[in-house]
Image (cartoon, rainbow, N blue to C red; front, side, top):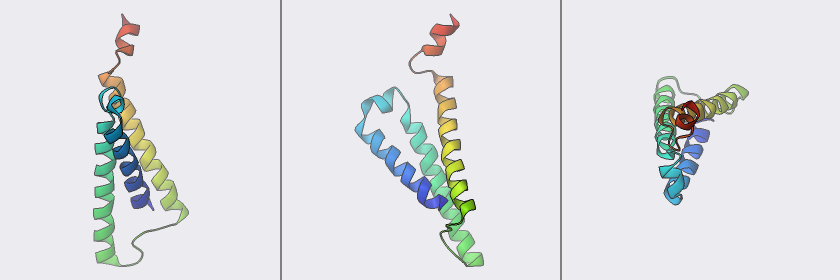
Amino acid sequence: MWLITTTLAAAIVTAIWYISDKARETYKIGMLNLILWGTAIMVFVDHVIGYSMEGGEFIETTPDAILLSIVLIIVALLAWELILFVKDPKGVLRSVIK
C-alpha cells in the first residue's frame, strides 16, 4: 500500500510542479517532488527484492501498511517544510528576525 500512496503522491506533486510556476519558484515544490519520487523508487526496490527473496504479497493492504503510508507522506511533507523554513523563499523569517 505504501508503494501506491507514495507513487500517487509523487505523481500529483509532479503535476503541480509542471502546471504552476509559483509552486516551482516560491514554494520549492521540486524538492518535495524529489523526496517523493526517491521514496517511491526506494519502496519499489524494497518490494521487488522482498518479493523475489521471500515471496508472498507484492502489495500489502494491512492496517499497518496503510498507517505506514500515511506516516511516509507526513515525513516527506515535514522534510519539505523544514527545507522551506531554512531557505525562506519569501523572506518571512528574515523580516521577523530584523
